[in-house]
Image (tube, rainbow, N blue to C red; front, side):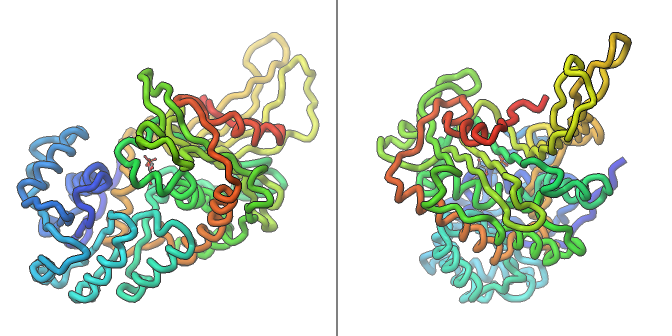
Length: 488
Ligand code: BG6
């Protein structure tokens, strides 16, 4: 039986960008689920803020519709919605801010969370106003959605400006991949078992693959995405954070800085990729028209309604961590939109057995693989070689020892935001990025972006519904390896 989750203290949570896709599709549903589970006390307030001139009822109607579409129970939604309200505010104008400050002042002892789910160019204005209205005091916290800036310089500007209003201890830079169950399971698997850690190094691991594949295209988010691209949108944050969780040294405890110090060392040990080696170590692609889930879909440039964009919707990279544990072990990273399936997976591939005692007719010895699937259907599989049962000589079979979370625990995994939002309310930043981590990640990503821009080349086209440009296959096949696309 699963223990009931502990309720948090009552809080006020203000979502700037409250009518946006993230708020409506992810944040409000996450809060609803925690509310239904009894973790959010009734006197808490959830306040959506955006420029649109809506009232509370109008906002609740939007949220109600989104929750019901997501399968929520109508009567529970009706119990939840009175906690939700709306304020129309413009971060760049004073109108309405006095009244907003008064509203916030009504519950002075509550934890106050300001979630900035807006474009990063509004972060500074919003924080400055929160500061000038005295809303950064006491138990106030600010949550910054990624991407923080679009390179190191702009991330520094944002972090400096936010830092003038909120202390680092009040600042929660969210990366929702860190809230996914399987990612946290990496901590349990690596540091709660004696089995893996002795093998977790260059002596025993051949390489690591991290794939985050999506079937969706860019769709409505094209205006944001065209300024970002796959490297900024997924690699600089989510994929590097996954890489850190795989590669970091054992932290001394789960204390926030103990974990983050170790992740930072990994980020700082990444071998630079720049104009000198980007052509060998990176591939970028852009989807053209094709198929997704059996339906014809337009290409990226059609969605953009512009035929000139070098924004990559796919990237594959061969990264390396220059430290004593990992030197020489490639980390192949890959992410893209409009790929054949939605799957996020970390595959740790162990070295070949040094010598086979088996007759070649027994079958080929495959390398052991540990596969951590983040989504869909979270599971962990360990691929091993065994003897095929029964008479008929010794025949080898390659099979997986499976741990499916749904089967083992019979519960629906909570969305990452559910866990992370309550961590903010509790004031626990372990699963959030510290400023120096974000900077180290940009320090690695900036020269790649510069190399791509300087190359004068356009991204390679790939047909929607395929695994990206053929160069991504060549990137790994050159090393005598291949992508694991089917871990069944
Ligand atoms: C977001 C990116 O951070 O993560 C999106 O901006 C991407 O482009 C999304 O689609 C993927 O998240 P998830 O949880 O659906 O894998």
